[in-house]
Image (cartoon, rainbow, N blue to C red):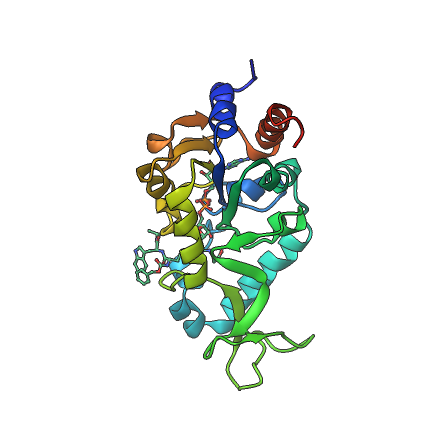
Length: 250
Ligand code: BV8
């Protein structure tokens, strides 16, 4: 019998699954020290309105402010390291015939933890691109705020802002996996930002079981088969350890 209510059922569902999707949000990184978007007191959006910063219009209106906001977040994230929950997810692919990790997070922590195929739905704060033309670019040290691209435009973070389309290749991969998975594990998301917020329902409507790990109820909880009311760092290793035991350490 596990410590957390729902944990045994979560293990049963994932142990019986051949194809699994894991989707993670900001709560996945909170125990690494990366603030989430909504959780007080140090929520990222406590002092700012996301529409003012995480949009093309916000950047066009005040490029220096938006550049500085991302530079501050990049410096803070660079100080963090993945926790045992990130490392547990990195152990999951070999336990299943099909596995896909979809993250809303831009902090690179899943990759650092050893996950080799991460669908970064909302991009990556450590990558940059041209604001006008979208080609990848790297800022010169000590360049302005924001730096200029060779083509004369500004550089911007390579993240998906509100009102921007996600990478169609990521969308195609996500929906193909959601249509065929037996279970989706949803970790650390309030389930409010689309299209990622809709993924659990898409999987469920295609016949998958839904397992959620979150210390608080979210927009996903009403459709979850199992809601493990706990944090990612301590729960995911227990889940993966149990699955490895059941799989004979496969
Ligand atoms: C799109 C990158 C098509 C940047 C992000 C009007 C106009 C335009 C668009 C829209 C519109 N109305 C709706 C939309 C669609 C919009 C949307 O969904 N808006 C919401 C606000 C309603 N979506 C988009 O615009 C997307 N693009 O739809 O394109 C289109 C185009 C034009 C017009 C219409 C449609 C693009 C969305 C991507 C935005 N970019 N990030 C950056 O980071 O700066 S979003 C950003 O916020 C994150 O990536 C993430 O997705 C979201 C935050 O959500 P969470 O990750 O869930 O984090 P949150 O803080 O909310 O929750 C944390 C959770 O963790 C909580 O549940 C907490 O309990 C839990 N937790 C806490 N501790 C732990 C824990 N869990 C586990 N363990 C713990 N220890």
